[in-house]
Image 1 (cartoon, rainbow, N blue to C red):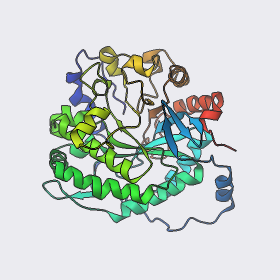
Image 2: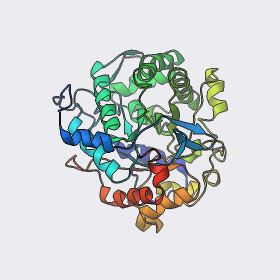
Image 3: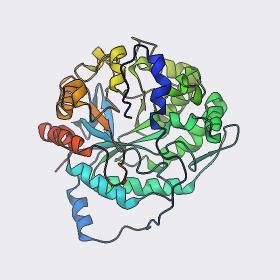
Length: 392
């Protein structure tokens, strides 16, 4: 997410400030809206379905994403929520229909969406952190979301959790801290929510990959999130990865906030295959690719990734690598247009980039989308065979 901060010499100083950047997001209940159970019949919809890019299950071969035998490059964005905890009975189906159509028309092939922003009203926990149940309207809303993705031919990278779940002083934050501190309760979450997600949607080709958690770094570093040890955090991540691999063909990642925790150059790779397998005892506890986040406040401590290869930035060479979140409006700071940034990322061997956007005040257009549009459009014209590899 956008974090406009002065360059800091020590990463530890910025952690609490950065994690608070999302505090302006609405966290209260949203008003429910009526959702039609069936799509209205219309000729334009039929025409859109016929012309939409074809989607195939994405796999990994070496350091490449492959869709039906062809290389896929992620010309992506983040459209994380329209409101907050969208995906219950408050989902605005018309909004997502319109946005998916617009994104694909402008060359976007994948967008990252938070399926639940902090867990309230979706995954319900006991006071000590054990999953009680999942709101059934959540699944109904996701059915509609993925139907729309299929309709428009856009890949979704669903994010299942965020550090926001663990933030105090709200009661739910204390409950989620209780969950992640307990291996038993972490196992229950993986079985009751993650496995249910896989079993319900494992045949959906529109799901590019599953992002288990947004920026788990802050759960470790921030007082308000409990300063939970990495052993607990990575156990939950590894357990979820294992359940996904055991119950679907989805590829898996974690949106780590800083290269600091995704590289042996710094504090150690907290999502390495070795670490996740050691913690869980499962050979299925691994990530298929890395999707590290980057914002310019990190530059003084960890460098700038967009003019470097993933390995030069500090990531392991054995997996595909995507910049999973970054600025879309930092041209003046870095002396590089967003279109140049996308191309530089491609030229340096990354497998994609997904800039951060969220709804502006009227909730009808993405913030600074006028900056994003020419960049994604340019890439779709530069490498159309990799952005939409199965287009007819």
